[in-house]
Image (cartoon, rainbow, N blue to C red; front, side, top):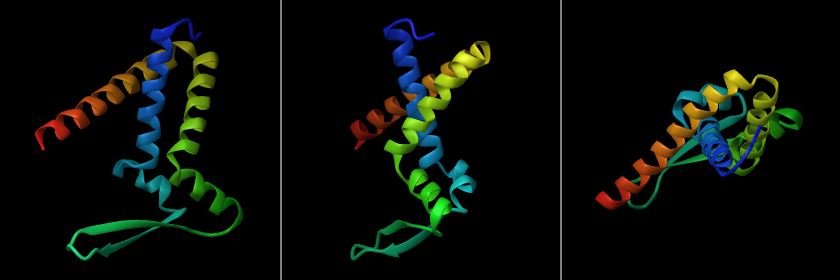
Length: 117
């Protein structure tokens, strides 16, 4: 199913976006909430800093660690996307394109924001 560089690029961008969605985005905080406790503190400059404390032990702690690590979650997201691509190719191609375009757009937006600073 992965036939060349374009497919690899699409899968890479899709995996990047899905990983960020799960690990960092506010819209999916409900997924992390059973496993994470967010602690907010003020630094000496008055900026709010958020720390993540992993809840529980055993499997709960393992999921908490997984959801706090973009490297770990990225591997699982890639495996899930590849699995979906092989099991359900038509649906997966649409999902991969949506995530890849959103991933590219987020990278472009980050560059634009840095240039504007």
